[in-house]
Length: 549
Image (cartoon, rainbow, N blue to C red; front, side, top):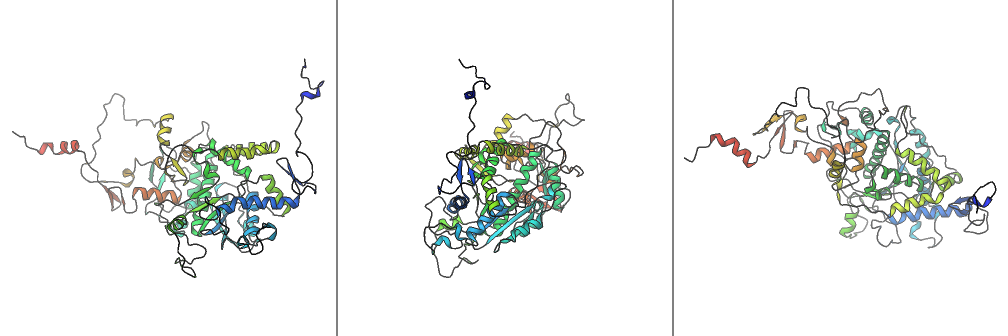
């Protein structure tokens, strides 16, 4: 019987698997010696380049036409322009290079060999391609502004438009009105110190966007909430910029490794219901967002909808192109190692991204997940693709009850009621004047229309019914230990500003532009009326009625 001692028996040790399966030669051409190993398969440089372009086209091109679920037509005819979200990192840099090679400069080495020289796929697909960069240096102290470096990098590629935004534009009313949105006269905010998330009016009108951003981030409960909020704000800024530029597609440089990190960290934060949106998403602005609802003109049409010759279109195609942005991640089948190899051989000077850290802060869920996934990919390269494939098989359970007012993704029906049943929350203490032995004081509602202040009229309004589960958890899930603020010198106001799209939808749902519910705004006060019940009306007029006798 074996004792299993590795010193005496070498067979008890598990043999380490080779980095490649059979041979060092390329698995495609069979002749050249390999230059890179991708999930135990060896490829040479000459075969690696067409492999990456094939994976890139295979993921992106089936989504170009409005009807992506049907049989793909030969010609690619998108419903609008293309917006590329650029962060300066490895994935977005490789994505920009691939998009320019395949759809702008029309590099012959990236074209499929079949179809001939005059094949429709050799024509330019998008008439206008815009690169959008969101600078986040104002969200964290001591972070370097990389706007000039990003602009110089994008200038290397011709025939591309460049748009630069700042993360505080999410709180800038001027930016919202610039893209066509409408803002109410009054400014609403939310109290993040109260788990009920009450909505109230801000005491200061016209607050600086940078100050509003810092106050919002400083009021968030955990570092994970700060990182998630920055990602949400960046994503919504890109989507609204896509609407402004008439883009029907938004492409992001999320690699296979980054996608696995997003899926696992999203599940850890309660975003399992919107897991499919992490891979591909079709986003339409809400009808109450205050944005124009005009359809996006097709590339072969002018602004009036007329082309060079009359062209009849069916209603389905018109409805498909109506203010819808399709978010695609063309690098979702390409790992981080493959992106690094492409950047090296293509000589792409990656600008890079700074880490979202501040003094005293511990790593969030996203950072811990990334460290785990990257380490896992080094020793077990096939596990990362297995994570993505497994998550792609999952289907959300339950009906959709609208869109989240903060992130714009689907809200699961009944999730707030479920969370209220399983959560234990601390209630604020009663006022000092109240005593346990004192009888409860009856509160009499006004019978006739009464004048109440604006803050009192909305005292019971809450942001909770409009939020999805992950956004509500992000704003309310506090740590047992005190969390250092990114901006410790920033005062913590009781009510902080909301992103402009959230404030616009919240005011529209409450009817706040000139009136709210059944109340009318008069001289800075709300004249509010309500419907009385039969018993209440009988009690009011009872003393004025004569007896039947």
